[in-house]
Length: 174
Image (tube, rainbow, N blue to C red):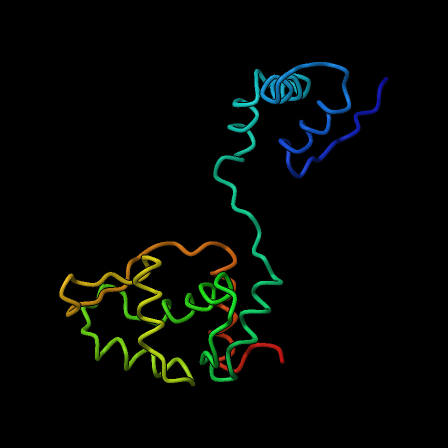
């Protein structure tokens, strides 16, 4: 009797590309994906994806990015400075966004006051502009009304929000 040897493949697409490169064939990537899925007992790659729930799976958080962004916050959970790198700067906006009141209509002065309380530097205008530009805050055309845009942060953003909240509660590791 043959022993079943389980094979866990982190990314079936990458595996399929490597397999196709190793085989002397001119099969397309999709053909190779379907062949791999059929070999595993599925009708085709779509059947494999549906059966494994891969279509709705989330990538794990980028813990390195979380550590780099969390280092920009003090022990009270306040942002201490703007990172020069755009991606890191945008990630740092998420803990601020999470502390804005959901569903509340605010004017510019209210938003600025809230943001100033979450930052050690006095640059609420830049944070507000970047949040509007990234779709995290909506703003009336005349600039009078602001509202937090409800959306689901990705795993890295959620992890940073949690890390900064832990800092401000004093429960984060040093």
